[in-house]
View (cartoon, rainbow, N blue to C red):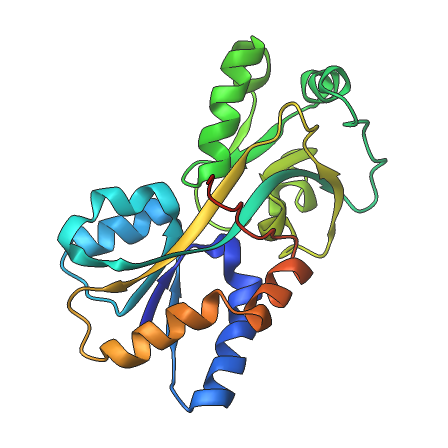
Length: 228
């Protein structure tokens, strides 16, 4: 079974897939790429059995997925990381966060992921696009925190669950609450899957307590409950 997934949930999903395989015997081949790149693969005709991606992206997939299986699984907040040997900056308030990114030699952010798109919009909203953006480090592939390890930037902005993938970096913490942005991830079965029972079982498992425990261990949060 082939699963397309955002890398924001990779650390948790690697473990979830192992548990699912142990319990069911179903093998899972996972492809981890930003949602925008996964959509490009789909447009090029590549097939999948399950997709785990930014929830809002499913609206553009239409008949490519089985909409009745769409299931929220987790959400990710955005955080800040620095080199492990660097002092941790103050990001406790909006004012201190703005001061931190304004004084940085370079701020690194994703050029393809949801966190990067939000940070670009945030810089515009805060009025620092020219001041901070003009010397930012845009990471188009890989994990953003690698930029603070190799010295090309001294601040890294990315989803907390992805910052975890660079152990040489120190995660300072999440963005201040008033600036925080959450990206929700959902899963759905591909309409053309040849293993619908297994695919539906996997999507259900992604919302199980066993899977949720893995999300919480990797700096993800559970999706917010819909309003009633």
